[in-house]
Each structure stands twice: as structure tokens, then as C-alpha cells.
Image (cartoon, rainbow, N blue to C red; front, top):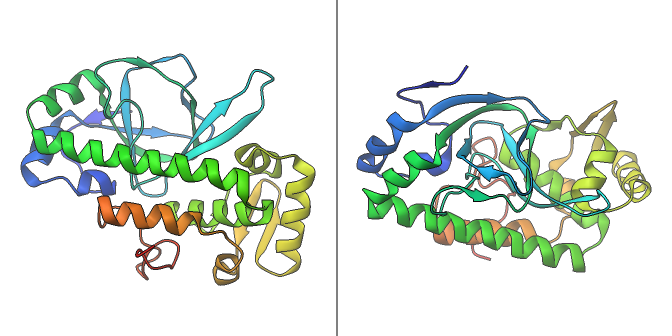
Length: 255
């Protein structure tokens, strides 16, 4: 059950706050847990909370089309937040927020967040810079979907998911991954089959495990590194590191 109080660091964006700003926001945070598949909000819902994923928790922003198909526009892990971070009060959600990897979150009511931002200019500026990083991720996602192959996009998604979560084994089906990328299941099946044949991944029922991250890096497009580079320029140190051995995608931030 959620409970408010003092918190250990577990979200990089919150950890980047100045001590004075953390003192303002920390008492307003709630510990909150969600399982994979939890919908934080649907398109059109009034967003009442902001969420800060912790540890390996991972959330996908999904645009749902009229025929019911979905496509992921942003993935958010411990580097960021979602749900009205820079808005003024409750706003209708534009996309679905779906918990991809369950775990712990920090949660804060938007009314409390607005009061906290009103009391600190530096707090407002930090969240505004994060919103810029999130927008950069969405811009890059649009370009990636239009220009890069399904194999490149699959490699990019797997590297982003394992890097943000710190987990090499992901509870995801081929149907779910196809929905993330906005492609047909048959295309994903052939792509994953090729990765499996090259001993880059293993597949089990409802689970995909990356066993050769280096080989997977060799197949991805430049999009992950580009987004990571923008994070480093705007919010240095916020993007997750992979097992303490450098940035999540193993590439230079100077992109």
C-alpha cells in the first residue's frame, strides 16, 4: 500500500534535485507499486498523479489508434517521470501509459507537485529540462519508425529496455513487442528468430532474454545514442548506467 515519508534514492531524476528542492518534494512523495500491465491512465483520462519509476520499473507511452492498434512513442524508466510533470493542474492524457516492467514507483498528486514547483524556480527548471529530453525521445522515435529497419528498431528497443531497467530478461511476448514497434507479428517473429539463430537472444514462453548485448549493439540504429547524448547535455548523469560499466548503450554521449 502507498505510504508517504522519507525515501531512498531510486529515481535518477529525483536524485538530481538539489538538497533544498528534495526537502520540498520528498514529504509529498508516496511509495507506490504496480504490476506489469497496469494502466496508469488512458487517452482522455484526467491525469491526477505524476509517477517516477524506480529501479527496474518501466512504463511505455502508447498511442492507440481508432482500430485498436498501438505504437510506442516513449519508454520511461528510472531516468524520468510521467504524468503532468510540467502541466498546470489536471490535464487529459493524450496517450496510454502502460507499465511494461512492474515494480516500485514514487507517486505525487499533481496538486502537491504544482505547489512544490511554485515554491522553487530550480525545481521547475529541472522538470522543464526533463520535458525537453522526453520530447527529444519522441522526435527520435518518429524518425526511427520512418527510416530504420525492423531489425534495427528491435535491437534499439531491447537495448533501451534492458539499459533502463537493468534487466537482461524481459517478460514480453512477440505480440506485445510487435505492438510496441507498430509492426505485424510475422515481421517480429522473423526478426527474433534471426537474433535467436545468431545466439544474441533466447526466447521462452512470454519472456525474451538478451545473452549477447555486444552483438545487439552492433545491430541497432543510432537513435538510442542520440537520445542518450541529449540527456547528457541537458541533464548530465540522469540517464541510467548499465551495471556500472558506462552508459546504458555503451556509446559515447558526444553524439
